[in-house]
Image (cartoon, rainbow over the protein chains, first blue to last red):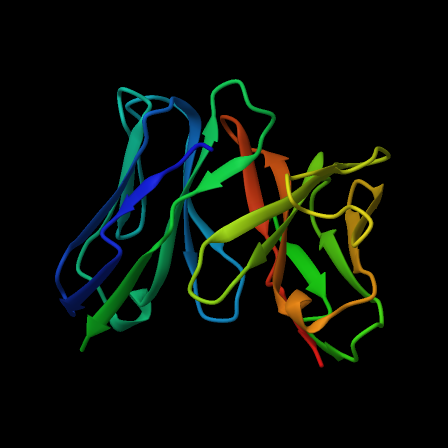
Length: 112
Length: 117
């Protein structure tokens, strides 16, 4: 089936550092979504991207929809302890009926 | 806006019983609702997609008679795990699709932790 390659799998950083993670695929996507999931909770939408090249910010978070429509990245600036969690990218394939394909997640740990 | 609730948040049941999980979009009408299953330290696995008033579309390998989905209105979908067994223990998450500023966006519920004894 279709796959999203999300990297890195995990990150251990110091508070205040910037973070970058990305998702790539060999397929073309119409939509890229970035979610954060805390343990025992459902994913929470961080940023939604709908157009190739789109760059969107949400506070300290910035995400971009790759110009080729096959990738996306998420940056977190000046990380804080509450940024800890698992970040998932999700994409909606071009021509699909709305189903999302999820990356395997990036587990972020922040040391105070 | 775009809040999705799930009930119950946790349920423990005996093997052989059936469990119903509700998913509601609280402040918007959802054209489509999705049901996912998530194993520990894994990503979300789509089980089925449902549209209001029509039969759900199940992913390959998901038993439709085992996981009954009813989408009675634009704000409510239910998942019933029938004759539950310990291997059905998992974290079940629903999402509801809303039309955003540029396209479809899925908003997730908080999840239901099912434990079958």
